[in-house]
Length: 86
Image (tube, rainbow, N blue to C red):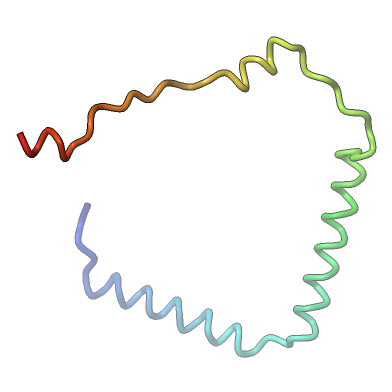
């Protein structure tokens, strides 16, 4: 991994200035309208493609048992204070 040079930082600052200028020139109403329109289109396409009202398929009991099987065990040792006092 190389250390960023002054030229690299200059590029970053120039890009940040361009983004700041672009954000300052945007119309808030236009941005809000486009955001709401995009959210509406994405939601409608999800409802069409995903079909949330379809009946879910039940998993076989083997799959359910594998999902809820214990991952491991925990074993506790004796108290630490008692072993330190000895």
